[in-house]
Image (cartoon, rainbow, N blue to C red; front, top):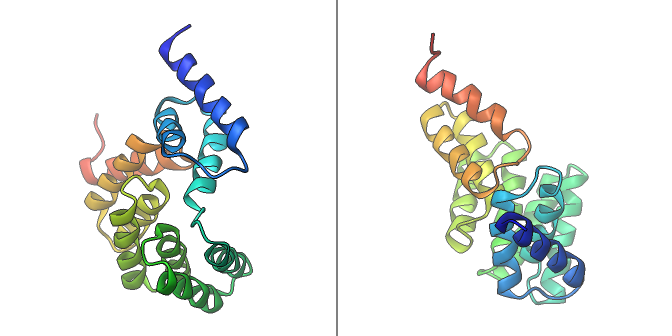
Length: 182
């Protein structure tokens, strides 16, 4: 059995054994490493479990604020989402998902500067947050900074090579930044 197959078995076992329990740092580490080499069909399950772990604040009250912020985002109410995420950040300033959620809400509201600041804080607290890095890449591209956007997408590729839309984004930006080859 190859190294990747053994590793993937460990990741799948961790997913099955701990889907509702509080995650151990070793589980998160295994999932993040497994995501780098996972089969494209397994990546969404691994990614989902990583998000579950990242979403565990350790406090039912904070988890409720996170949930309410996400629900408001899904309903398209960015103002309410920002309020919930801001309250979460006020009470749990070391919890990266509060900043990540608010960054998403700011992005959806077209407030890129505030979104970038929350992405910066998310990545300070969780440097391997591939979703926040994806948001950074989208904003940089929107702001007309293709070189920086390409760099951000390449970092996402290092962390999560099967991320939806990643290959297309990199190809598009490589053409824009590096030009077409004959």
